[in-house]
Image (cartoon, rainbow, N blue to C red; front, side, top):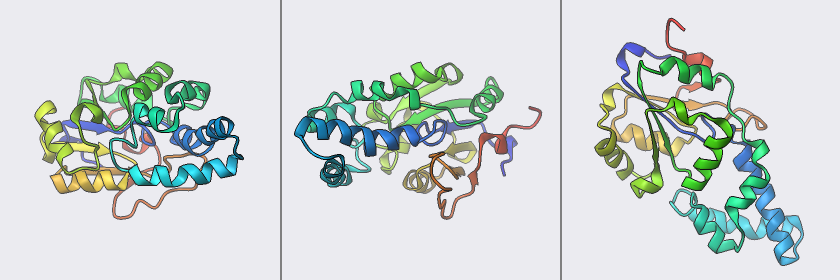
Length: 218
C-alpha cells in the first residue's frame, strides 16, 4: 500500500484515526443531549432534535471543534462533561506499535482539529503524546484541516515536502483538501468508530488497522 522509501513525514489525525471515534460520537449524540435535556427539562429525544441543527450549522468550522464555543452556546461545561465519559476514550489497535516503528525513522506529527482541552484530556488518557515529534492543533493555525489554507499554514510551521508526506485521516473532506494542496500519500480509515459498520472511503485507499502499513523490518 505504501512505499516507505518515498515518505519522510507522517501526518496523523487523532479522532477516528489514532483514537476510536466512538467516544466523540457518543459524547455529542448521546451524552451532551442527556445533560442538555436535564438542564432544560426535555426528553432525551427532544434534546437530540434541538441540538442536531445547531451542530449542522457549524460542522467543518473552527466553532464545531471548539470546546469553549459549545460551553457558551449550550450553557454546559463541555470539558467537564467529556471527563464524565473519558472511560470511553480508546486507542485503535496497533497504533502504539506503528508509532514506535516510526520513532527516529520518520518525522511524525499529530495534526488535529481538536480543541486544546480535548487534546489534553485524550493525551492524558492515552499517553500517546510522547511518540510525536510535534503536535499541531488547528486552533493554533486558525483554520480547520478542511480549509484549503490550512496546509500552507502548516507547511510554514513544519517545512514538510508534500511529495514525500503521508497523511492518514478519517475525514474525506480533509483528505480532499490535502490532496488539492499536493500531499502525495493519502490514506483513509475503514472504521473510525468501532461500534459502526465500515465507512465508505470513496476514492481513497484505506487501512483496516495500522498493522496494514507497518514500516518494513518491524
